Image (tube, rainbow, N blue to C red):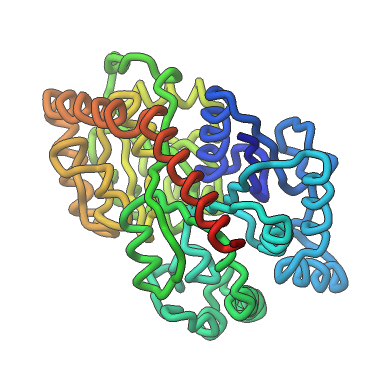
Length: 413
């Protein structure tokens, strides 16, 4: 089977891209051929398909007024993306298309081209973009469901996107236009990474056939769980450094306790965190920049446990899966899809999101009981081996592909 993966970035920018590459490698290992369609970017991995990629646009950068107008038009409907993906398909015919994050830089314009050619299409959903113009169902730092039922204009009123009315109006217009065009209705099967994500999308008024297929982790990268390091124990947070991740709450929880916290990653909140640690003299927290995979796995293995303190509807919580693969339990916020992985007193401990006192109690509980940490860690590793391995994922993915092919044929009959 020839599969085309479409994603706006072709480098491991975040969990969505890491998961996409993991799936693509699995398909290639099973004998399938994988092609990519993306945006040109200096960080992209090398690809034989790069000559078909759309030109680079940085919505966060400084651009001229004319450039802003052009970028806005592309966000709504990219004729360039539609034209370039058509050229790719002329030279590299595929059997099925697997969409990932395509909003803004690519736009759903490419779906029209796929359907013109009669191709089956599946789409992995890793956030709430199709029911929330600003992706995260957050407004002014709080969980928000104002756009339920397609009331996307609420995003503009609330200034949900970057705190700007203009930016919020643009993304609200984007989703309103796409809803009126019914363009996402052309996707044959959507893939949600958790039961929570599926149920929340449906609750918000999303219409579409949604299958559930969790992310996976390559256990070959982790081998057997490593023993704890010698010396003072440490906990770890690794991932994006941004406000919705609950990192201020995490720092508050670590004040004055005899346990190190290692924060690994980059993001827009990094300087704020560094300033908080310095000004409030929180001496037991250290921040490390982004680490490549082998070094990160080593860092996870050095820790007693990981922490996932999110304060938004985390769709899945891939970092929990990676900690589990290393044999480390997770202290996770009871929100979004996290409890589907962090099963209380089984693979970790849960706490009330945003509650530093509750988080501190769970941290101290693990820090003072190595036997408990080891038991939860064994259970966590066993969970990954049983439910999040390559074979389980592959069977589920192929079943979804076959379902999409069948649905596509029925639409065309």
